[in-house]
Length: 245
Length: 245
DNA sequence: AGTTGTTAGATTGTCGACAACCTGCTTCTC
DNA sequence: GAGAAGCAGGTTGTCGACAATCTAACAACT
Image 1 (cartoon, each protein chain N blue to C red):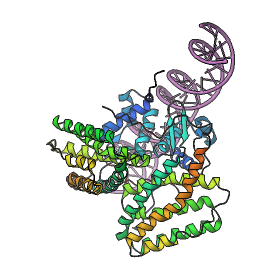
Image 2: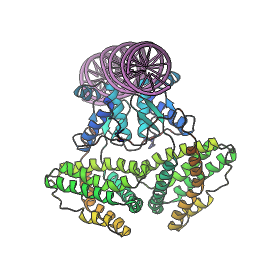
Image 3: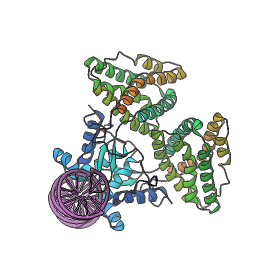
Image 4: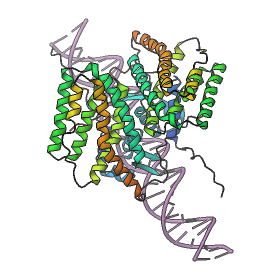
């Protein structure tokens, strides 16, 4: 018999598809931060009952892309400069850790995949497809986390990435010019192929800092403006776990 | 007017209470890893409809305490030695980062809270209340993450902690003797009060390693045994995000 | 005997309707 | 006119029932 590994079959539940749809809408900025999600309206648009939609929203709440206030509504999380700062500083730590874990595991397949993803970024850049540019760049950076063979690290990084991607999309959408952005990943890729792990870690920090400053400045400028109407009044990020006693 | 900070009102939705109930059941080991959760049965026991129960389960799936296989069921995540190893190694990195962030923010209130939590651990130890012992010890360790003023770090640590607490509870439950455990946190607390940040970071690593080795050995011994019946056949931790194209 | 098709039972996924709740407006009172 | 009480509309939370799917047991066939 042919010894072939079949991929697990796709999730064919409405819930899973709704999650994918909503996530994409949030990450690409089609749903703006702070915006309220009307269950009835969305359910009708998707031709779906509210039950699977609500379950999907619960998942995204836990994923950190939505916030929920009982009996008031579910909203797209709103971006604060501090959130971005927090996410980035943690991201640096995770990157350093990922490089450390990945380093001894690098092989030919790793280098090939690295090149492949790097090429995808360059392609998106040539196409001036900014959304895809963000997506591919994050996938390139994600390789070290996938390769590190630490499921908890990967999961954590993916959560972080979701939010970062949202911020990036928001940023891009605000700027008129679509960020041509030369190939700023070349050095990063080369260092990952090289022999000096410390150098790679150091560069990961500095490189990330680069486009980060710009993003942070933008976030700060956003907060100067008056809070928009759809803003939930006190919907901070403070998840209250009733853990007491 | 009296300037008084009122605590936010409690979540009075069934969903939130169900989440709390289930989480506690999982974290204390009342629900065993790999066990299947029958929706109808649980809903009847809680005198609740399946809708809020399912939403609650979706949250816990995203929280990493449950895994779901469409049309097959939702199960308590099963513990592998590798998971524990992964969680711990990441935890070390996070601890180091948390200490770094917290260090300049330490003040009298921090020290007071540190002592308070330390006292809680000692009390639980005197009471021989192993479950509470785990809970309070994790709360003591959590202080640096709460104090670090980085919401993303805190959230990440809480996710990690949930799973670690589950592992600990499983471990404790398996051992007959309830781990009297002297005051192994004394040095840790003293170092956090001291002036040498590096020393505190170093000790956090080593100290954690201490009880970790024992836990890891237990996890490995678990994997020697044949897989139990209620085990979902191929329910790996691979969350598949259909992100493609 | 081993494999394949069928069927009954149980469980999960989804739906439409009702109840609880919040919001804004109107009305009433002073 | 200002403020409180009450009503109407809309939205979220919950419920019970139905549809889709899986599992296991049994029958039929090679």
